[in-house]
Image (cartoon, rainbow, N blue to C red; front, side, top):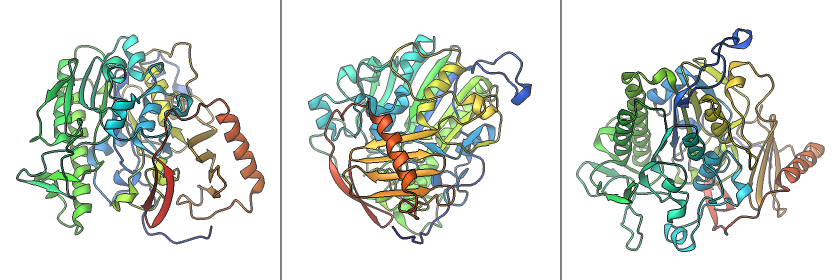
Length: 486
């Protein structure tokens, strides 16, 4: 592959903080040699997950694209991970990896399951034998709740209430309208038609009980924020775990005048709506941080903020400094904003550059609240706190892996192998000098390619086959076409 020139910004910038709101971390309060005192313990955990939010969409990473002052507060008060990764480049599998702390390929969750109708009819979802973050934190004594997008199956055995969560407010599907499109003051970036036979289209539920919530006139991002504040108020007197899975800025492109008016200088209508959706998400994060302060819970709450995958570049709304985008195993698809904050247990304003993964969230929050995972299936993440604080030397992961048959990717140090196992292509990149993955070094580094293939083969030897077939599609991302299973 020849080198090409690509417009866009490099996804680096001011320190980004990942907020993990969780129970106490069982680590010392100091850093380095000073970490000799009794370990603090987090009381509460909050994991905030954005949907299709790119690294360049957070101003703590790229300051001049979309201002996100509240998300940036997490970075300023905690840790920004500059090489944070999702375990997949699409929504549903990456959430399965986050929730279990296991590569989702270990239990067959390799692709999105397809339409809401298929998910329901065929009974597709997160393997019922897998224990989730909610299962483990509930067993550790935390009250557990989820607000927002589930996307892990819709039949009763897959429901959040059956997977460790004690309450749920949100939706099962991969996407939903944010608001009734025809209301005054609503700005739509595309034609939005109701789906005549889709049982989950703009259907918000409250559980236990699967109560349908009639909310067509309330902007979903604001509604999820309001529900979150009520959750915090109700549970301020007991340890809790909240999984806040926002729908923004996933399509459909919809905003309200309040947010749209913040970006009069963006000429492109769809880009303006996208920026408005990110701004609404940022407001929601700020409201959560403010409420934690008001309740006196901030110091003892571990907050993690991240995205389920990279920006959906096929929408033509993304910064293209990272190649590919959602659905691809290139950096644009798997690199994510990843921030963490815990005032009592983590240093403020720290930037951490070694590769980390969403798999690390589960062991980090468990250790923070003084719990540990029970014996059972192998988990693939590590507790990040001692690495951030410098009490553990080395790196969290020597190698990270991705598989979306027939595509694979391996990152080892600065080296990234990206290839198709059907022989269609094989590329090697040095991310330290080429974060945009433009310069193919496979021909000049055949031994390195061979070793990375061998590492992938060893890792994948005990993986199971995908539990369902993909939809094969071609997407255009930043001017390139990519064929993949979705």
